[in-house]
Length: 312
Image (cartoon, rainbow, N blue to C red; front, side):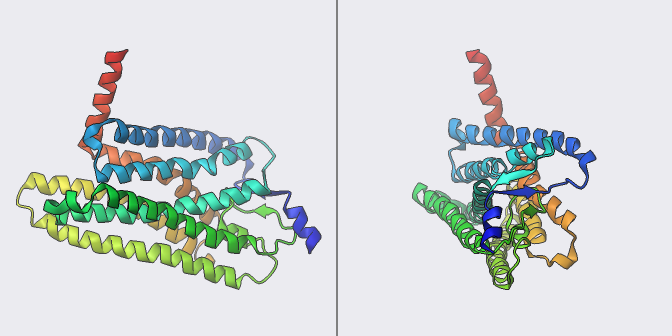
């Protein structure tokens, strides 16, 4: 047992789509383009939120936090994916896999809590507009952001620590694009019932509770929006909230499918691609969702580009 475990400490093999080698170059190009779009889109939102005084509001403070997560989230796994897709070597070091596991879960948990915080911000803005600046003061905004980041870290410590205590018995082939908890648990040769129970419990808590809070917030928001007399006011409130709701559905939909549904309801290939969607596609489309329907962000981008041309 000890010998087998020590061999697994050397490296893991990320299988990815190695059973379909003819698709690897296509995936490499698509993944590289997606990653560049992630870097461009999320960096732009962070830059605009910092440089444009009109965006110095709680909404864009939380949005810049979300973009920071969406920058770091794929960065924790995409470079390794690209490396493995380039050639026959699919290995990742033990320390690299452990780091990827902790960071992946930390940032995933953080994003889930941030979406709750952003729903609360929209609730206060729509349902308590006269008290918005008083309630959403800078101290509360920083506190809520800290809770999101620390809550995500707690999620990571619990799940990753339990997973890494499993005996691997020399099993090294991770049937996924990255070192994720469900794929790592499948490597274990011992009893994994406790780990699966902890995984399901933590995932349920970090999914059901936030999602319930978000849905309740949006029920109240919908009632408040319908009471707005101005058609322009209803449209603006609807557009702002719709962008956030689409991001929520993308994030939690993929999380529920990838982590909470029993293995019998979906095959491993589906799980792998949901994992890829969760870590790459969602961070790539989030900036587009928030900018395409947001006049303030588009206006800030035009002002920034105009200043750049004037300086040039």
